[in-house]
Amino acid sequence: MDLIKLPLKHQSWLVAAVCMVVDGGFVLLGCEPVPLMLLVLAMTLAVDAMLAGPARLSGWVALAQAVVPVVVLVFVDRGLDANEAGLLIAGYRAGAWLRGTPAWASLGVLSAGLMACTFATDHGVLTAVLVAGKGAVLPWLVGRYTTARRAYLAELEKRSAMAEKDAKAAVTKAITEERGAIARDLHDVIIHHVSAIGLHAGAARLGLPEGNPRLTNSLLAVETSSRAAMVDLRHLLDLLHGDKSEGARQPGLDNLDELLDGVRAAGTPARLEVRGHRRDVPESVDVTVYRIIQEMLTNALRHGDASGVTVTLAYEPDSLTVSAENTAGRGDDSGSVRRGLVGIRNRAAMFAGTTRSGLEPDGRTWRTVVTFPLEASCP
Image (cartoon, rainbow, N blue to C red; front, side, top):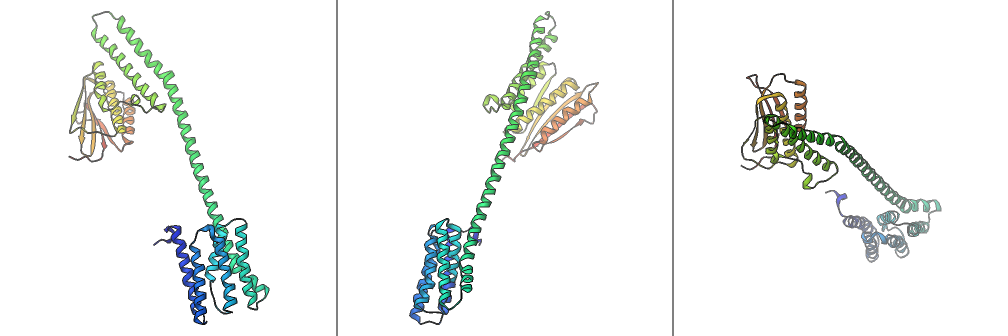
């Protein structure tokens, strides 16, 4: 059993009990008449039991402990050890718990009692001073030191906690300022350009002569994509500004149909296949999967042919697999492909996901597969 973990009240009672056993044992070993021995024993046990009392009474406990040797000397004469252990603990308590006049008064009472008993037993001044130093001054100083050290450690812990709090506040402030700077750049530059793209595409579509539906559909797809980009940018701005409302929620798997419609509007067939029992995934993973599928579709538009792209969501009890297949087109920009795949791989790695991509054995089909581990669900 770890005694340090005991409540303070229990520890004080334990100390008092040990003092009563030790001091009482010495009293019983003294060769005195039984009536006197029982009287001294009762006094010793009583003052030692006071050691379990509240700390604010340490001065009175020290006074009682100092009186006992004097009473024993007067009524029992010499040669009987009474409460030496209690005197030591009383001196320690007075030094540890008392401050100011009560502390010094307790030290004086204990020292005076010990010196008086030493003088009365025909010892000199030097011996009396040494006895008082050993039985009163030393435990009193140890108590003062222990309390001062405890206060010093508490102050260090307080300073450390304040420093850690200040460091966290500084990091939070820096992050907030950086988010504000990014939000300003998004608002002042990116949103302006995306908005201009949508306006010019709309103006070009309205100015086209009739009879060219393919070009009209392409411009309409540009308008739709620019509006979707504006919505996403607004969501990002809300998040950067700390807005956690429902309106600031980023798109997830529930928005895949809108994403695929945008690809179809650009003239590329896009198909979605869902395998297994659809299940809820953490919101952060939900957003990440959406962004990965968005990047897969972008790569298919840039580097695939007109046959389209197929996206597959495979739900397993302990994982979610996202894959995309498309026929690779000619003149493929491998540098752009690598950048897109690096982005997919980095997003997946944030959630311990694995990524593999490349051409299938037929040499024409490009396949990208990302697997996210999930907590196992009940069948």
